[in-house]
Length: 426
Image 1 (tube, rainbow, N blue to C red):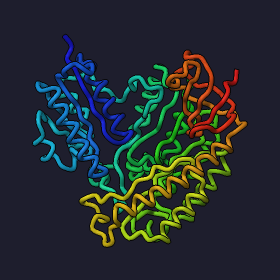
Image 2: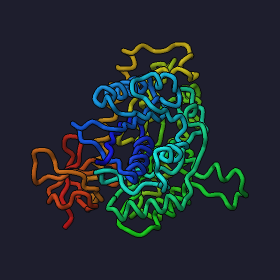
Image 3: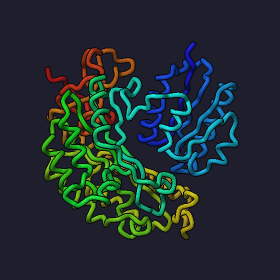
């Protein structure tokens, strides 16, 4: 009988990719996913440490697996495992702690995997797949622990990435999301040793992926404003049929004084100018972002600046995070830590602005033809399908379930319940 495997992944897209990499490697030696009511022989937990809550959820997941699978071995990896390996080792049933993601091929080798994969060929039952292109971050934002737990900048060889893209497309994945810890630094580790004319950057990689054959589209994951270069924008414009006109650009605050305390690398003017450059080059692009509210010392005026900035840019979605002090980061030791209630209030205000901007952007799409990745049937509505548009808008339209998993074109008709109702282009 095959050995049974359970995996739990917390945190980011990169973690999800790395869990899939491990699952695919273990499948070569006979591991299969345990059903929900089956006990597993091996459990893999991929942890997160971005916030204290990430640590807590990671510990809870490990303890729950140990209770439900008392005879299993638990292998723990991820950023919490890197930051606090002794804490993790003390948890029940933990047999191994992997503190460096570069050790994943070695870990597979210890389990008996001979043919170590250079990438993945599937992403479970999803219709989009993540493609990890690099690891590590050189920045030192004052609130962020990640550069301490993923410090080494490592870019994947371009040919490994292109081979992976070909496998995923051949296996039916219609959207590939380029992801990493800091994707704008793709190639930087190599370029340090080469003359400038031989440099390889993210724009070169995106061009190479977009040039691959097959019916699929590319979405660029979270990126810093200064790394949306003129070269990258030009590639997005050149391959407009293949690369979605959507960028998730991390703002964090719209106040210059807060940005300085955060140790961010640009002013709000630089950020706005970069968004305007993109807007002029692409057809009605969608901008999404991350905002931290209640950063230490944030005044009412500074928060108002953030609201003004997000209005000026016109984000279609904002991932809002109330500031959470992370032990080991400079911001955790700053004076004037704000009370939880004030952070909640500012979060509600920002959510109201986001709701207004989101509806404005969706309204601007009405009458337009949009490419949609069809993801599911709407619950309790047999003839209604839902999916995600190229511009990162949720779409609902009438259609046959045979379309699930495919790319289709629709005409946006009206905005309803935080989604666009559309009609299929026959």
